[in-house]
Length: 471
Image 1: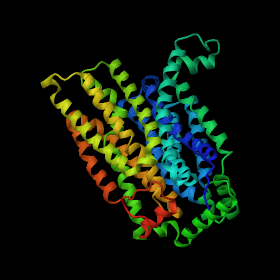
Image 2: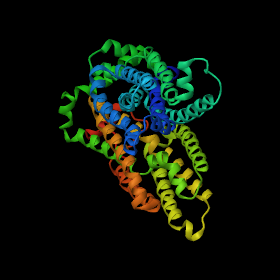
Image 3: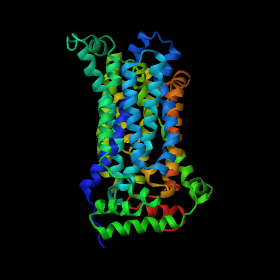
């Protein structure tokens, strides 16, 4: 029987889950506009300032460590609701924090929300999306992250503008939040998307594949029927998931002892952590200081960084439209090849800029090229692959393990990049990033199957030695 997905309904579910990505991006980026104010108000040392910036990463590692197990036991929807609550608590707590330690606590709580949503939102999308457009829909999550980054920058800019006006001056409380200590408003405004996320989550169903695995067959059939507009199709989808589940009777942790299952888990960990060492976070987080090392003023460096952010968003939109047509692996081959060339040229720029008098505009072009190739390949592909390459029964646990690797890599890059820049110099740092692209490319080429257009059950069959072949 022909399957006719209800595309508008599936798009609605995907957009709701993708709001988690916006919160991820906003919470991560909003901190940049508050550092100097918070440091001045609480008289922070350099170490304390670094802890204020990085403490959310600890929360993310904690959140991602528990999210998979919680989502396998209680469902994807409930964990997304929990993350919305954590984001809301963090936003309100940061806005009213009376001490540095309170502020750190609420930042860690928000980080836990980031860690949870970073694996559960794309996982939910992958489990409701038809195979033909699954890549594009999961990519909505990555797009939402980039929009969250820009949203935070724009909100910080707007609130700083308000602080220079007479608006809210008549109210002592509002005057404190929007004028004297505007960082409170910057962190507190996250309550708006967090509350919206919580409300709209109440109107979406639980993942039908999770319902099947947890023997809630009637509910699963109902959800599949809404997704595919046919009761017969709903029953067929349930039978397909049940048939696959019957082949794996072990528990989640028991399945990990199976070498055929452990293999994709280890491969997911590898591409998650390697992707962080290919330079993208160093460019996004340390871009202004890198530009300043090329001789730009602080203002020009920030302007260049905004352009980097815009290219990141626009390219992610492009990736969203082509990822299912081109395929995951071809995007990686194209994008990572371009990343290697861009990184090598950036390395050469810093090595020979003084010798050859290379203009700073040349560096901007190379950075924009690098961001283009990154956004259209590894950034667009990573959450798609991680959300679809694991067996149904252990998808939550496996994504927690991969997510832990991703956040560990993010933490290490954040800590090591200043050391790299100081000891290797910008030229050596970008050369190192270029070299790290090769093992990533090899794993995608030799070890990961092409998943575009394949159902989650077909992909699961691949790891068990039957069904689709690697491409």
